Figure 1 (cartoon, protein in one colour):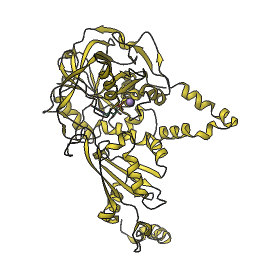
Figure 2 (spheres, helix red, strand yellow; figure 1 turned 180 degrees about the horizontal axis):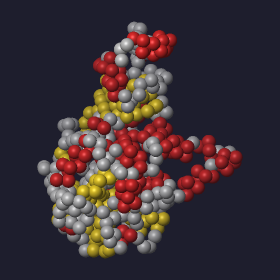
Figure 3 (spheres, rainbow, N blue to C red; figure 1 turned 120 degrees about the vertical axis):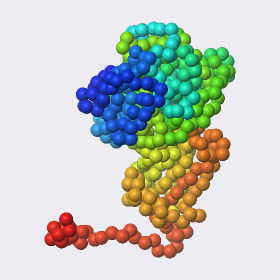
Figure 4 (spheres, helix red, strand yellow; figure 1 turned 90 degrees about the vertical axis):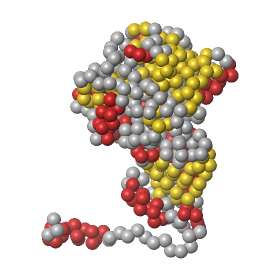
Length: 479
Ligand SMILES: Cc1cc2nc3c(=O)[nH]c(=O)nc-3n(C[C@H](O)[C@H](O)[C@H](O)COP(=O)(O)O)c2cc1C
Ligand SMILES: [Mn+2]
């Protein structure tokens, strides 16, 4: 049963004893961050701050902050279940013969549920107010932050050419009671749509949903191709259509189950300094010029909760959203690179800085082919370091991966350095958005790859001796 909304999910977390209510008054200025950071680093509970200074609304934070809660959020025992379902849907043989067509009916029925459903009455419009962000418990996360930031917003825009909507998570810096920054990075869909409005001139309608059911929140962070509406993907994940309602001051449809909706527009020729912001790299992302979002209305429930997240040095809550992406998008990457067995985005690499990938190597140079393919696929282009290992190595076993990398490479032969686009958050490259990326081929090298010497085997004990020692273990009196 899909979660109706964020409060339904919150209740579920509480029933499972995975949420703590904090009744003591806390300050949204830095204090919440320090509390959440300690809880995150201890792999602790979701938190509901019921009494936040200067705001009537409770703050929900760290709701996604463990593997267990992320699985609960997407209602699976393992993220692999979603990946398997995607593989199943993509298996064209299901749709070929008539017999198979009949067999695939349940699957098609599943697809019928993915499309959003328009409704005319919605909880997110119970109260309609003139915009005043000062009533909301918006966090100032870190000491050098440029101000307060809305950290879990679902920014919804509409392509003026195709009429298709996009929903991406882009943080919003509060400038005053009714304007914020609009931090869509250079390569993101929101920015592409903005460029189209820029050609038209004038105002670009924008709506921001704050607090939806967890699958919808996750979908806004998922690296989907621009052609896929995140609200359809949300319907697929939650196995029920997302109900959507038209905004009051523009034509954008927003999730009806949201806690708050910020309606408004971006002037296409107005930019303002945004940042700095303590970001998920563990560093402050640098200030830069970004568009300004003007609010025209706030609509909300009668008793909303305000969801937030704090990002910083990993591991923090957002790492688990990234981990969900690692699993869910594996089958889609395998479509491009069928030799990929598994991949790991280590938490310390914060989404895109590092990927370790295991492959079933069948021809010379294949590890390098995989690196170049990955650098060519969507947001994988940001990956600063790609490590390729053979299929016998589990990419999640960092000790074995490190052992392979340290031992298997000849630096001149196996390290690939390329130049190209980088994520906006990268601070190490000389230029913003552009710099170098590295691939390390830690697979076994073949003579057809120029390694003409013998390649030694991994040291392994024989199975019969292992069995013998296991059987006799007690006799040795070691423990
Ligand atoms: C907590 C969190 C905050 C994020 N903040 C931003 C941001 O401020 N700007 C941005 O461009 N991407 C941000 N992202 C990443 C985007 O949400 C992600 O790249 C998404 O795929 C963008 O959607 P789009 O492809 O429709 O543009 C954030 C992700 C998370 C999990
Ligand atoms: Mn998109």
